Image: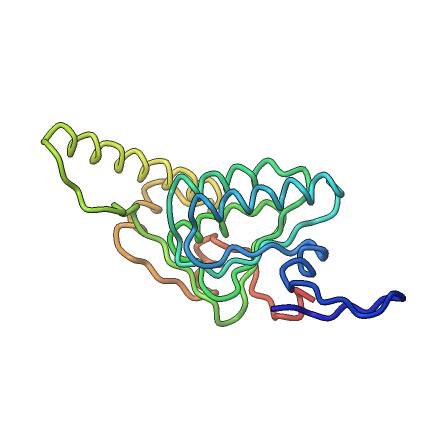
Length: 193
């Protein structure tokens, strides 16, 4: 989708994502993959080089995705010199909920958004010999511990409370998300303007 930008030189069509990027708004939408994580890194690098003091707004509407890709985004958010404010504008499920929770400069949800937290899932069918399956299982358990530690750190809950909450697909309303510590405040859309 393109938008028209008027200037003294006339009217130019610009992709809406580029126009929003100029306003320091980045989207995490759809599945979180290696490709989308790398695009996110590029955008945050650019915005930090442009002005490391001015906030970046990250808008999430995602069902989650790959743990390693999500952890790359997490690391960038945590170490960005520019303040990163995070908004859930629809859904923040699974890894996307972890990313919502990790905002250090404001974590917000629109009134009808939703979060969901759960244990890490296997992405592919498991096959192989018993040693391979044990290795996959050990890796999955370590991912579970890592995600629970991160959620505990950012929500103020104990690891045991997080483990209990993530033992099943736990859907939370904005009010429940605030109470659990996944976000700070419920805001209206005009906050993004």
